[in-house]
Length: 179
Image 1 (cartoon, rainbow, N blue to C red):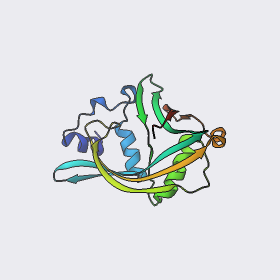
Image 2: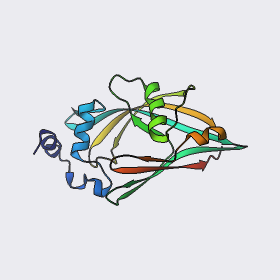
Image 3: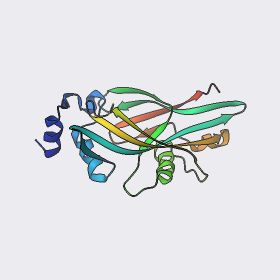
Image 4: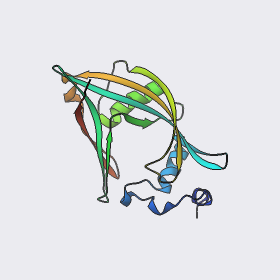
């Protein structure tokens, strides 16, 4: 067992569901996150916690009189597993040394293929402690920096609605806003 695996197991985390074939990430994925500085593990009051700085961007598109938001609909893993997401806020881990604003613009480029030169509207910062859907059983503390951006129909030709990665495809769609 690796040191990371031993640490996870010693804190009572069941790794049997950590697998791309089950729509989750692996111990190797977590090790990569830690090595790249995207996340870190800490023991707080006896609990093992994953700490992550995240940027979240609500992407809105005005089409005529209607306002839509971009939604990450689902992820399809190359193993055949599928995970419904329905995320109305697109999120990305902030790299070590990167500002939240720079990470927000990187998110638009990486997720949607969109080079956005304008300003993102800052909506504030919050902290959340949740069990990670990517790493079942591992509590995660998220420091979330929130932004929004408003695009027009003319921007749609610059957006892609699928992000292909080495082990999965993320699919995006537009959802009508009710406000």
